[in-house]
Amino acid sequence: MNKEIKVGALSLGLTYAGCFFGAGFVSGKELYEFFGAFGVKGYLGLALAIILFAVFGSLLIRNVQLSGRRNLDDVLILPDLKLPRIILGAITIFIMYGILVVMAAGAGALINQVFDLPHYIGCLLFIALACFGTLYGISGAVKVFTYLVPVLVVMSLIICFTALSKYGISFDFPENNDNPLLLSWWFSAVTYVSYNIITLIGAMIPVGAYVKKKSTAYIGIISGCLFAMSIALGIFVTVTSVFSSVESELPMLTVAFTVSNIFGFIYAFLLIAAMYGASLSCFVGVVVYCEEKSSVFSKHKKLFVWALGIIAFLCSLVGFGNLVNTVYPLFGYFGFVILALIIGNFIYLKVKK
Image (cartoon, rainbow, N blue to C red; front, side, top):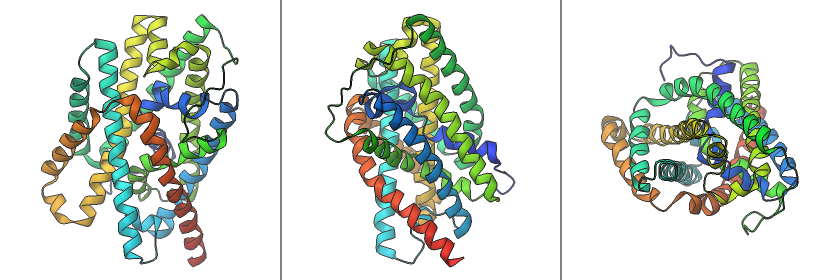
């Protein structure tokens, strides 16, 4: 991002929301696995998650402002502890890259469900688009989110309201958590937040360097959470009301097609756009981190980006459903460390100031 680009509260909020509007979120699969599986308690979990997103998103931007730095490891571990920094950076970048793989797998599942084309074709096309977008850097990501998120909010809510008017709202859905990695509704909510923080951290740290005022940080992050909450609540109510949809890999897409084919294709586009936004935030974060560690990656950026893209494509062939059920909770466990570091570094920076 160059110095001419300014990040105000609205741009910050749209970017923050866009970073975790991924395949699992907008498809409804992720929201059901982490919240709907706990029955009505899922509403409590969803509310807790939004509050935690507001808290940790604000702390993350404030850490960037207080430290005056934009490196991932500097923002999370400011004291000069080289080995912990190296370990933390390597694991975080690995997870961010893993989320790119999950998004590509989600795109493959979508293309297969909508157009009955082989899974690998969707994965390949998606990775190619992600590579092109990443080459434009963090400024390109901010522009994408500025236009993408408002469209996602409006269209998702229209489809949700239309589906609910047809099928009605039901709060009588069973508690059906069979995932041993998610122990309770509140633990599942914290896990959900922790791995999503990893999704957005790579993009939000460089963006945060261009947020000058404390008030901009708080207003922007809270507005981003409100955008996310509006979509999450609409999708959550819709999926649990049309309960048969949860058996699908992409529940909301199934609901949209039951309403009409037009809505189905519109929602398919929204899903691809959301996946693209989440993958872009992670992919850009990975590349920026590597460029700051070595000039070799900067000199050969195109080759580096396309090489990472090819590897991600091969890994995405595992399948979307399998990745959401197992990889995301495991990522969330490591995310607990990230949440603790964000709090600890904020306290350290405030005391130092």
